[in-house]
Image (cartoon, rainbow, N blue to C red; front, side):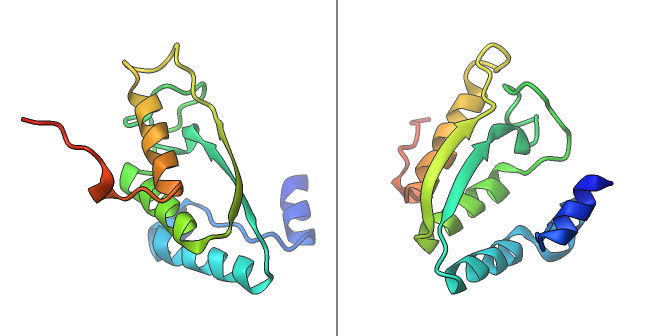
Amino acid sequence: AREREEIHEHGVNVFDMRAIDEQGIGAIMRHILDVVAKTNGLLHVSLDLDFLDPDIAPGVGTTVPGGATFREAHLVMEMLSDSGLVSSLDLVELNPFLDDRGKSARILVELTASLFGRRIFDRPTRAA
């Protein structure tokens, strides 16, 4: 209850899963980026791997079903990159001992590359 009071008291905008489902991650990201740009702000990105669905990123300490898909996460990273508003980044919650043959680590690298401007067509493909 105290957390809700502090969020309200400080005017923090909260976008929960329902908002993401109803509005879409793209619309929410555009809103956030517009607010930051209008205030001449910058963003710190804490790429916390456990926000992803555990089916695609199992190598985290606390898995919670219903997390973001790779497509949603990739879109967020591309939009952040395009905005030019990101000033710092940290990568957290990867636990290699819980990972499935590096699956989560590879996702983390892909998302980080997207944040730094790499696009899908820039990625090498595997020969069949």
